[in-house]
Length: 365
Ligand code: F6R
Image 1 (cartoon, rainbow, N blue to C red):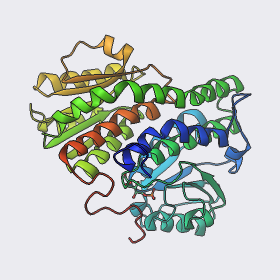
Image 2: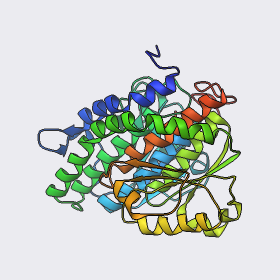
Image 3: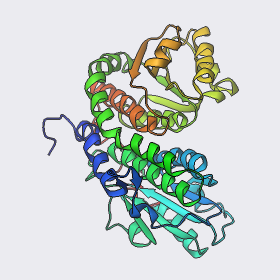
């Protein structure tokens, strides 16, 4: 049932505040602002390295998770798309742990990667939406994302729920390993618990502007997304979402890679979507944006109020989100990239919930 929405994808985008609340309810102690025992099913204390493997959007959630585990828990993370992970003969030892992220819990390559890690004696955690899935069954610890059924082929609410669970696990790992203090844990958890409220406000405020912008975007052939830090995986997620449902060619790049190749593509026909909250990387990303502007590129600037005030470069549009802590920026900044892909596809008249050539669950290699 789509409720009063035109597509499941739209419904699922708007469900995010609610389902993230459910996920937080499962992993967070709201009264004490700590993560709870559910996050402790894997003991990260003596773990030397964490391997993460997944496909598509779940892989990009894992890539955001890598930044968090390394920053907050000082835990080195190896991450690969599962189709590479399963064959690349990565040396593993039992003092390592592995996380597999999958909405369906049935993705063939992710399952094969899990089995490879199991054979090597690693402790296995599964971040899944379908709790009765094969990946969940074969894991030592199951971390449900509690997104509810996701019908739209393009993943939206599963992505932000995966992020919520990974953030909780990274905080738990940081506490277990003594790399964040109790006070820091409380501060981070406090930010996490604000996500549903902030997301609701953003969903209400950006809708009209995004719809307008999507009309222009539906006329272009190529789009480039750039970002730094956790906005880099988000840039790739934005590009993936757009190409999946609107069939517009899109690429996501680390902003610093621009001058190593993709800048050659910039002209007035290819919009560049710059994802840049006013964080540690902001100045660097703005200098990349400058390079785009200098070559006549059209910029769609997704930032916060502080970021918007700090740049005076001409843009095709500036989407202003609330200023939030770096930890939760990936969840909040997911909204404009999801809505931009959604409305662009609607303008183009594609089958948003069932895009051509794609299946919701990829159970063959
Ligand atoms: C993107 C998308 C796919 C899936 C990928 C993994 O919108 O839906 O890229 O994320 O096929 O699927 P799961 O998470 O079921 O393993």
